[in-house]
Image 1: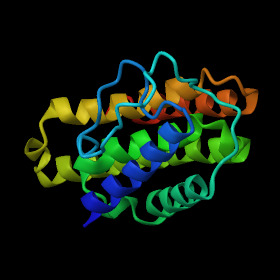
Image 2 (image 1 turned 135 degrees about the vertical axis):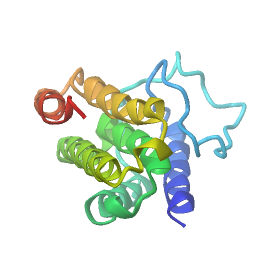
Image 3 (image 1 turned 180 degrees about the vertical axis):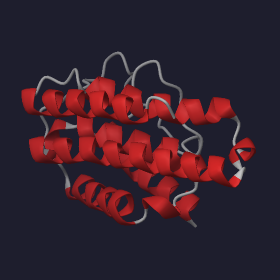
Image 4 (image 1 turned 30 degrees about the horizontal axis):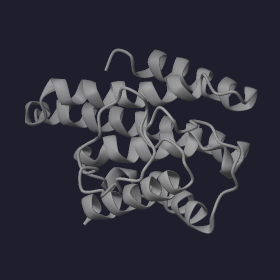
Length: 181
């Protein structure tokens, strides 16, 4: 059920951001598993023509997507299957880069990424202690960490100084805290 819920959340975020002419995925990043079900229209502008940081207002749908993402990350992160982590990370990163929700929402999204790093560390520590670490290939684990760090890196280059500063501090702390994981 969580996979379907997160895929639906990602679909709503991608469709609404595409409608607002905003990039959902980071440039050069592949589509996370679960996003392949999202249908894109042929009239969708190419990534090269889209603005990555638009000056548009949030729609009620984007506000609902943000609130649902907040609920999932703050209260249900431990229930999410690890296979869905890249998808929820992509949604959080896209929400953080979207200016239409305001600075506070972007800073909150950076906090959500910190929560994801903590969740990954807890999961992988518990799996290693239980001897189930082999169930998840090391390459996949590394890709999950890299995905979170790429979104934090993108947010640390944001035009808004508050978001940039928060993302840079979070990225530094995440690497210092979990770099050995």
